[in-house]
Amino acid sequence: MLMCAAVLCFSLLDTSAKWLGSSLPTAQVVAARYIISVALVSILLNPWSRPGIVRTRRPWLQAFRSLLLLTSTALNFFALKYLQLAETVSIMFATPFLVALLAGPILGEWAGPRRLIAIAVGFVGVLVITRPGLGGLHPAALLVVCGCCCYAFYSISTRMLAASDSPETTMFYSGIVGAVVMLPLLPLIWTWPTDGLSWLLMLSTGFFGALGHWLLILAHQRAPASMLSPFNYSQIVWMVALGWFVFGQIPDRYTFIGASIVIASGLYLLYRERVRAVPEGSARLD
Image (cartoon, rainbow, N blue to C red; front, side):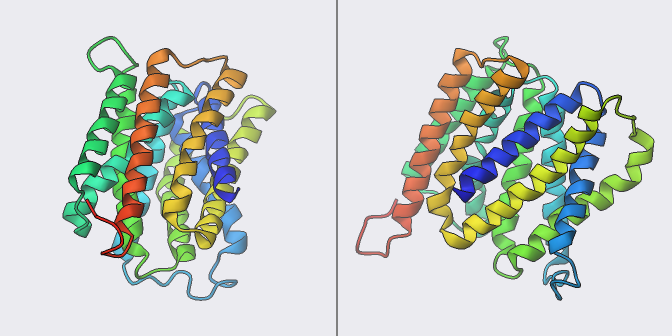
């Protein structure tokens, strides 16, 4: 339930960002998402209520990871101006495949032949969604692909930091670095919202971002990642529903077909991860 609630929050965050993107600069929406989120999170996570939260053994990796998340968020928000909600999230579902590929050279966790096949099939699903060179999606889909790559490196760095820093410390830096980067730019890009709904949606980007990440931490404290990961794919349901209800957009058949391929491949990849976790002798590995 915590994981499903978290992906609902992220879906509402993207919906708010897409709505705001039609009237406000994308950089302003990104800045609002980070600054408001940091203000809310700081109520619970700050150096006074949690002594030692700013202490990290790998400050440069924390900064690099936070910049990756900021870049991924900015690319995704900009792409949302031109793409449907379901299209962007379907492409982002390719992140586990990139993580599986990167885990070999970076973490020494090499993918076996079965997982490599699942990764290849998953990328075929992404190609079905984007249809490059065939008059498919708007070129902004390339921004989502780039954002997906950034998020994959972000996920890898998160796993690397898990061995040295607490989840609260990592969450603290995730927000504060983005806010520090975006705050000086705000006077240069600021455009006054023209109605109360825009103000409310700007606040909601920070609220849903903070709440979603907090629910994510609570979920991972109560269950292993391999058990929770499949629930990430429930986000496609929320994105399709919100895209239809808010923007009157229905994904085409290529998005549904490609998303089905990506989700099926991702679930198989997660299954192989769980098989690999079984002690040697009780199951055959890749």
